Image 1 (tube, helix red, strand yellow):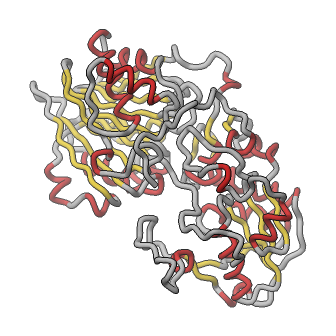
Image 2 (cartoon, rainbow, N blue to C red; image 1 turned 120 degrees about the horizontal axis):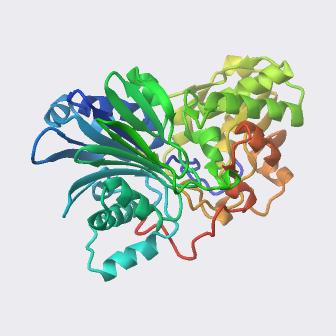
Image 3 (tube, rainbow, N blue to C red; image 1 turned 45 degrees about the horizontal axis):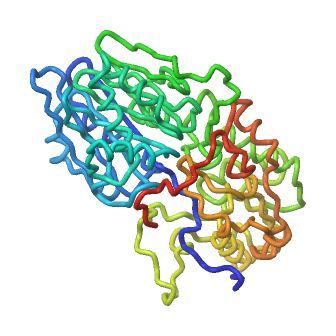
Amino acid sequence: MNNELNFNFEDELHEECGVFGIYDFDGGDVASTIYYGLLALQHRGQESCGIAVSDTCGFKVKVSAHKGMGLCNEVFTPEILEGLRGDIGVGHVRYSTAGSSTRENAQPLVLNYLKGTLAMAHNGNLVNAPELRRELEYNGAIFQTTIDSEVIAYHIARERVKAATVEAAVANAMKKLKGAYSLVIMSPRKMIGARDPYGFKPLCIGKRDNSYILVSESCALDTLGAEFVRDVCPGEVVTITKEGITSDTSLCLVDKSKEARCIFEYIYFARPDSVFDGVSVYHSRMCAGRALAMDSPVEADIVVGVPESGNAAALGYSLQSGIPYGTAFVKNSYVGRTFIKPKQSNRESAVRIKLNVLKEAVMGKRVIMIDDSIVRGTTSALIVNMLRESGAKEVHVRISSPPFLHPCYFGTDIPNEEQLIAHNRTIDEIRDLLGADSLSYLNTDRLNEMAEGLPICTACFSGDYPMEPPKEDIRGEYTE
């Protein structure tokens, strides 16, 4: 490993939450379905999770909720799920990008207020959260958490006092919100889904038998045996009741070219078996690999992907170039992101604990290694070194995204500019730091091809933000 790099085990991008909601019109309990839905979304957040359910049939609505720190299968037991009774409910998996990683900040949030009870799950980041929080605090609000999601819930509850319906309250609150958000909200007898007008984060509608589902990614619908109905449009508020689905599109942008889907949903965050706004994540990664092969060809014996998100791009590179695709890495799927990381004094490496090289696959070969991104570069340098130690004759690195140069304010946990390996460095300088024989990134103009022409946010590469960046720290009492 090159000594110029300060080793950091957190050299990975992280997801920023997954949301799930279901309403069973036949009155069946939904907690176990939410649990399995959250399992399918676990890649979006491993720090904490929770489920809140309610019964729409009773006169007095009671919300039962359980949440905790850890993975779904650590937080929930069959006994806990059995105790969550109700035919409507919401669930959440969390990775913190604003507000500390504590049980108090776990979601869903449950609010008891003048009009009854609300439970809400949120994916995204507000850029005006501190301003909205101060507005509430000056009016006497006392917060139980340090997350921007509670700011959203309070503003919805406050609007609900004046609005005729809860969906109107959600729409009124959305007029104040700036930033990225996909919301699933449970009111006593309604399930509401909402997406910010720029459409940063995904949210779609599914159906199974007589139940309707709102969920971050379509892969969870496949897991549950549900059918995909449609995506919630950017800026849309959908309301699901026993009378059907109603839609409010009054907040959708008139100029659709200003929508700004997070391109990293396609590059890394979403599961490859998901479809986001009509574009297959798997296909978009294959497209990136093909583009790399066309723009940055190199003679080699094998193309390999860094699992999991590098695999589809590696296959695309292989198909385009004709160079055989292979498996060079074995990933330990049982480690997870929150394992006890070795101290620097330990001989064990966090990367080696997660990833091992198949020596016979790379011995004596010229290897093209495809990864989705490089953040600080320390992990990539270690992986290149592992390939060389295993006998690779040459290692050519190809990255299926452009270089990270700017921070993200909309939910992607990108470190400060100074910590990014591409900051103030040329491609050749980065290649030297990684110890690779060659290095190429995806050209920025290829991103539109990956999203099949959909308007996307590329601010982390270009610095061209779809809205004005915040002027103050929006992360609350966030601690890394």
